[in-house]
Image (cartoon, rainbow, N blue to C red):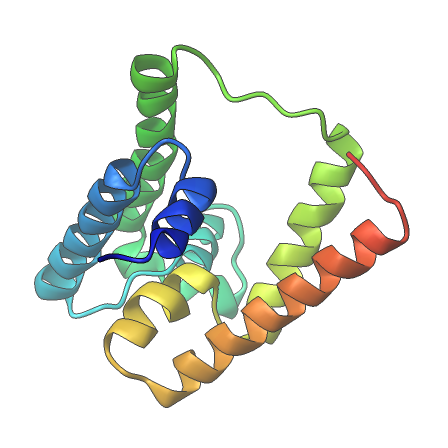
Length: 162
C-alpha cells in the first residue's frame, strides 16, 4: 500500500497540480534546446539583458553581443509577452502583488548585481548549466538556493513583510 504522506506533501506544495509546472519545464527545455542547436549558445537571461544594453551603450562589455543582439532581443520580448499572454488567457488577468514598488526596484538591483557577481543567472546556470552537468553551474545553483533560503528565513525572522 502507498504511503499517503508523500502524496499529501505533493498536494500541499502544488495545490493546483503539477501539470502546469511539467508543461512549463518542457517548454523551457525545448526553448533552450532550440537556441543551443540554432546558435551554439547556452541561453541565460543576464546575457540577454547585456545584449539589449548594447543598443544604447558603447561599452565593450555590451558591444561584444552586438552581432547576436537581434535574436536575443526577440527572445527577451518573447519571454515578457509569453508571460503576459499566459496571465490574460490562463489566469484571467494581470499578475498583481502587494510588494511596494521601491522594494521591487531594490530587489531587481540586487538580482542584477548578483548575476554579475555569480557570472550568470539562475536561468543560465540552473537550466543550461545543470542540464549540461557543469560543475561550476551546479555549485552556483546550490549557492543561489542556499542564499535565497537563508535570506528568506532572515527576512521573515525580523518581521519584514511586503
